[in-house]
Length: 528
Image (cartoon, rainbow, N blue to C red):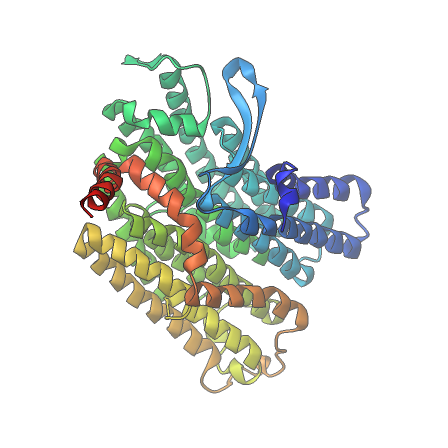
């Protein structure tokens, strides 16, 4: 149907369309033309999403692991190549990024009223940075995009944020920068070990390269002690971005102070870059380091699940409550990933997508009521379902998706994670289940306080229900929550091959068991 995408460098097109749009806004549009800038930037984001949709239809789950490959020499003196490609994991994250991009732009129309030109330029640049991270197959290229996306988010929080915006922006920048520098050291350690040795370790003497797939191949040959140190360097960079306990303290400040669209992108996409880093790099490249640090990773994940839920339960600000819920939900994702089996990884990766949809929608919904009342305090509301029935209905659906009600997306991801965790150690699943119960408690408590009971605050008497624009950007998220909850098969289909690949890399026993299956099948056929 979409054969044309095989004739063009489709991944580069998707990545740089927002950059091209940003350049047009900078050099071709006047700041006074705020309406035109708003419509043009949203049109660029919509175009980017429409260009990315054919990837879903043309991706072959049973085909090559990485598809739509693009490769060209870039800095040959140190072995850097411009290399793009996506597997099933990156495919879902790219589509999530382009979809939330359109929704974030639409939600900004009524929320952003000053310096709109600069705002939409930074939003478009952020899109390019995020897409490049998920598509890069060269470590140098990956690191460039990883750093590029840091700058626009810093300005989005620092200029268009709330009353403590500068504190939140600087804290976000410093945390992420520290993690990035340590991650860079880990990348350089891999590079020099592969090319000939590192600080007393006898290297492999391969040609210099930053190819991620090359590092996947040499991972099992890296000495265990070196793997431990490199894993630790990657861990800090990725754990801050997730964020895992105790590296999470920047997140509530950044979420609360960021504009609504910034919170949506932060929760929906940026946090996934940390979990994506563990899945793409730490597990397949550093299997021995992964196993050695596994108890610590699971412990921090379980602490994050319970701690995030308990702190969320104590919040009086809706946005801060949703922010702390992300700490709990991402702890759940990390638990699935570090179950190190197919069920856990499938559930963890799907839950990355689910969190992006449901928590992104929650931030949008909090933004809707904030624009009308300019307060996010739960105590300021009560009984508003009588004035905003449509808003209350959408909020209820997303709340149920967030707590994992069957037929909605959260249930599928959480159930699969629990299966993976139970297969590894039963009490991991038990602690995870306690986190789910706590999650239901704080979400339902918030919903009850905001929407039910008598309408006691006179300032809520004239609240207007969702308008057409708000419905337009919320309904795709509602539909996707039901789609994944009722029919997740297509999503698990695109994840099957990359998940199997990762588990084979990190678990030698699993790889050996799988390798015997064809032989066993052949013997059975012969016996027949």
